[in-house]
Length: 145
Image (cartoon, rainbow, N blue to C red; front, side, top):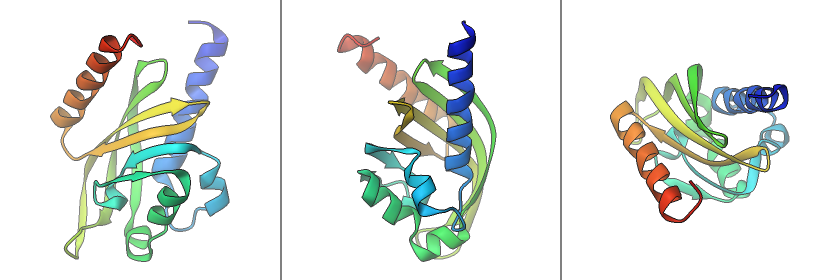
């Protein structure tokens, strides 16, 4: 792998870490700069429901209860291909039916134009790996992989 490709991967890993570790103190405009305008995300802060588009994602990230309770630490990541990063970390977040949950989270981060484009969060590594396999199969089927 060339120095440029390695540098790009390091930059995208840092971007993913900054995004996932951001909490209610993050500057909204700075966080917006990390997210692709056509982004689709399923996050712990959205109670694992999909949200589409940068404005809707930012609104979801700054919901008061969810934002105040959210805290995450990225522990590691693995590149699945040039545009897809598999991320593992610990997160504390607002449980949907009140209370607080704290668990290991796995994220699948896909990048487009150097920004986060699709992010999916999972509380189960096997489910996350299955989703990665499904993603690869779909890319092969439609000629991208």
